[in-house]
Image (cartoon, rainbow, N blue to C red; front, side):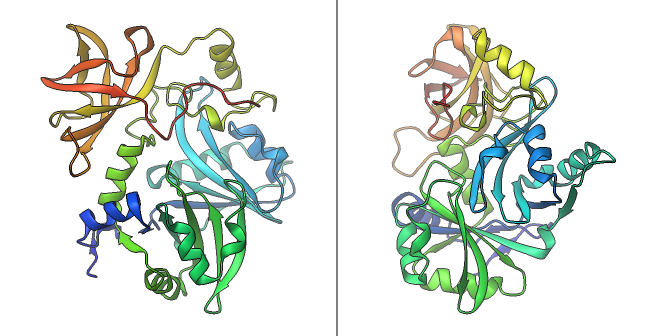
Length: 343
């Protein structure tokens, strides 16, 4: 199936977006996501170092375990939502493409003279695929990778597919079930073909962006900016309240303690398209701002789906709003959380 690439080498589409989205919803799709940044952190102090840099509790994680975590500023504002795999001698961070270079620079900035930590960008040395959809596990069965299926979210295992080393982790990066594959650039084609032969439908970046918005995953430059903190973005599941100090910890703890979250990220079912950054009103009063907008699923009662920050005092689910002349209804986003999970 012919792939169409962007100027920077990203597979935008396999010219099958409708089929790929249907597969992700009802069967299984495989997404070529090698634009996602991969950063390897090594050295004796790597766990302590990352524990102090992000919101997750790295010191609880063992070899073969992983988690989602957020890089935030000293005031709790969001930089990026990342995934981490803790390996025997390293930690692999999966970060947004737009944040790859800046996060490498940020991590290096905080390595002090006595720290035994090294940071390496391995994006160009590796490939990254994601399985997404309710039948993702069937692909693993076909490929002989079934041992990972019952592991917790974030867990990963090392395998060989047709003699090719590959690391497979639990989680699609969305609310839908799925798995992630990291492997070398030399053998990526062999594994990609094996996944397709196992029944997965290929998906490009354009369809993935639609799926991201449908499921409510926040992205840098859209929902993750210096305007919003990690709690407003609904990333409660990434935050440890028991780990102690880290960058931004005081602000986030204060927001939780004093119920200081003033706006929250929601999905909006819209009856037309509106540009991101459009003001959202209800009864002529400003209640929020649109951050993303894509076409809705085929057959939906609404034509478009948006992500938006809505003021808490204005209401939440089922609030009827106006987005620059387009009517919409607010619903909870499936990826994010609206309260702190049990610690």
